[in-house]
Image (cartoon, rainbow, N blue to C red; front, side):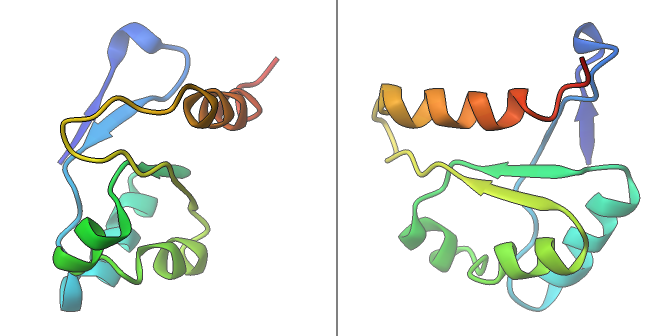
Length: 97
């Protein structure tokens, strides 16, 4: 399910639950793309993604013309300032002027 943040309009910003992994992952990413998702940001670490069956998430995003950004944040930790700044800059580049 996609939860569009209406207060962010006219920008299309949404929150989604993590996609189902393994055999369902490709279809999940295709469904997100069909709903208008253009950039998918994951905050999972590599081990979390692997545990959830999301190892191929970046590849399936690429195949569906969805840009995949990963800024891994360890559970119960604070994100590194430089990494978050980088992510925000990359996202800001997609905002129409």
